[in-house]
Length: 190
Figure 1: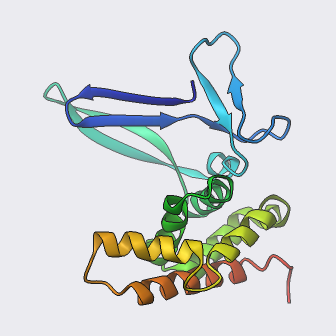
Figure 2: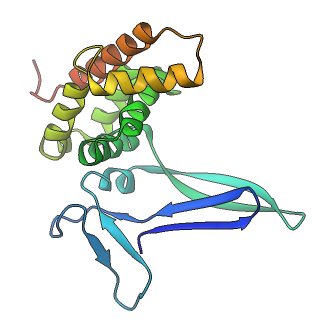
């Protein structure tokens, strides 16, 4: 009811997941909407960051020979990283740890330090109360080059690019996450 998949054209698969971040509903439970028999959302802590900080992007495609355009709300870098950190904490999937490290290392804003600055600028005081546990989990999963997150990042990257060095990739992930979390200054000003 909260995860939809459609294959309207051969080779085109559209997946949509409807998420909510409600304080008065248990985490990971399904939320039903009044008057809807087949539409709902899963309540996932942290996903509310993406709803609070987004930009509009126009996407174009050819449909029946005509160009169709749609505007979509897309989470900003800061919102994505916080929402993904909560998803990683809740699901503990290698893909989530890989995604975080990849985005910290390869974002268009200049890397993990700039990602942290954008996050603090946008969410400031909300960071400690809403993310302290999730960020602690993030740090633990990238504590060293053999931690789950570091290995997930390096394994995926080597699978995509066999010429890259596993140890270098794993250590890059450790450093990126450490820079990001440290720059958030969760303990307040020094």
